[in-house]
Image (cartoon, rainbow, N blue to C red; front, side, top):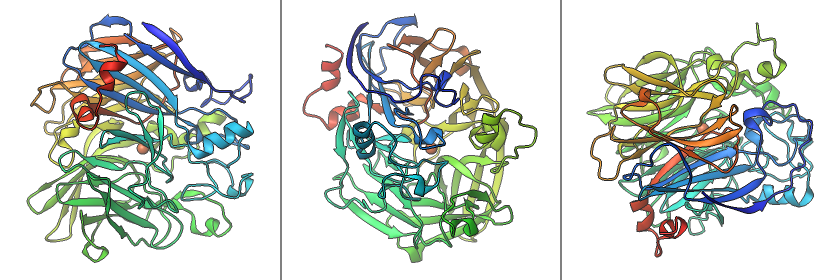
Length: 505
Ligand SMILES: [Fe+2]
């Protein structure tokens, strides 16, 4: 492995830090690395793996004003690229306006998720709540050959080189980007049309918008999605002809909000509502469907069957987990982040466009979240979902579960004691045709080895364990969202083959 340090940023975090989401498996990094020809620790790099795995990470450089929440950390993107049986690695901070300003000041300037907005030193800021730092640390997708990082509470989309993770600037959509509201995490790329579908939300009516950016990077559609009040949507879904937005009964307590207190509350007696809108539809075209009250952090996919829309995602059995019985103060404080507390299970909603009726069913008793599919099936029928299992009480992932949504069969792999993974993306094998014909890629934080690895599984045989394990230059922080971009798709958008240059071919 050839390693080079590209940069190192100064951290002002305390040396005796005891915050569990800034220490242990969440210990942030300060170094940006360039590593070529990654060392194979076990197995071999599949020769039919061509593309990049990208993962975003909340990686704080400075303490919070008072209360750090893991969603506040500065964005760091990790890249592992593959071609011709070789692999390379890069990691870079996302140079957001907020991160650069705090780097200059060497202190926190904005108030985080678990803080009051008026604790912020700066009057300006981002986020549906306002006066937050846009850390761009939540999600990452690739559209038109460029990676775009995003922030869960709405912000700018930062353009990154998908091979180097170098920040290229903010996305402008040829001047039409809605900078005043920003865009939520989880924009959806439809590889078949080249479009990217997105939403944003805020505290002012109509409280949500939905839009479409086409393959020319033009904002070709942007409409109101009128909601009854401010909501906290996190994800959306799409089918071949429709987009699906949501109005879920987990939102800021309206009375507290009048005092500028942003406290999410689950309104148990209020139904969930899903907006089904033609992809280029107007607000008057929206069909609303009611369903059991819940909160959904992530949807897996949606598709059409005749006059029905089928939506799959993770239904939370307890969106507002009780603190009863939790003795650890940190586990109490962050119980909303633990899969076993909010009880997320794969779920299927069916919306009948003719009758307006919803039917829904739980697909499994197994608690998982962060489900991925073969991206070629996005918007059309899928069968397999590759999800993460969680560590009890903590926002950490300890394994992978492959759900067969047709038979209900499940295969799983436990990463081992003290080893934590992140969202595993599915990378179709070069030349593959079957949905399950590819690899699952994740990055691990291995506390036993004080190291991190890129671990690759055969998507069809998860329980067999990794087919390849590659060493990274240093132990990285646990993180969340990831994506896979095929090399052939990236090369379509580039004049030079930078992947080949990066691996020294
Ligand atoms: Fe998310």
